[in-house]
Length: 137
Image 1 (cartoon, rainbow, N blue to C red):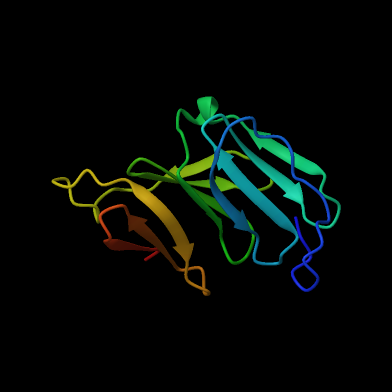
Image 2: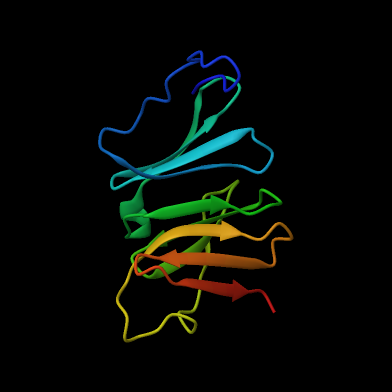
């Protein structure tokens, strides 16, 4: 973690033993989460202390993308073409989102996730360059 204005390294967020696939800051800037094939971890940005670790084998997935919801209550993860929503406080899976908006003929995996600022839509970027929007109607 670096101080953006000075470029000074503040501390290292050690914990992953293999390459990180995805990284996201909470909207309030207090937490950062990262995903590798062997774990999802979260840290307190102020102190650098690890807060949690979610083992993807429990979720039966290798996460390629993740993001926090704007209100900070949910975390969205993508593995292959599957998106799951998790409770941030308990690390419990809430729902696996339907694939209705993802073309069955295309096997391009999801590589990016982003919430709209109002938290009502989640966008998924696929490796083929397409973007899919999921809405909470």
